[in-house]
Length: 116
Image (tube, rainbow, N blue to C red; front, side):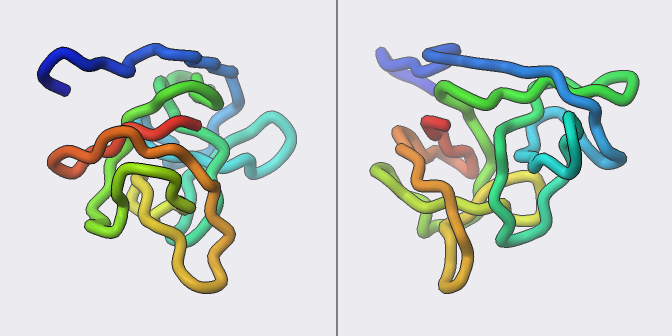
C-alpha cells in the first residue's frame, strides 16, 4: 500500500487452529472439523486468512482488515460478497455461491484489502 493511508492491523483478531494438510500462510481457510481449518475449494465460504502455519497448526485472522490475493477484476471497493477462488485467494461470489459480504477498501495489483 502506498501513500498516506494504511489499514494494517486495524481490529485484527487471530485464533490458533489445528491445520489440515495444504494450509499455507496467506491463504483463505475454512473450518473443516472441530478446531481445525483447511484450504478452500473455489466457490466455498471462508472463515479467515491463515497468517502463519507451523507444526500442524495455523494462526488464522478471523477479524479486522486483511490483505488477500484476488485475480478477479469484479472485486471492487465497497461491500462485495466474496468466496474462495480455490487458489488461496478470493473472488466475487457467483450465482448459487454463498459469499461473505465484506467491505473491500482497496484493490491493487492482484491484492485486495478487505474487512473480515
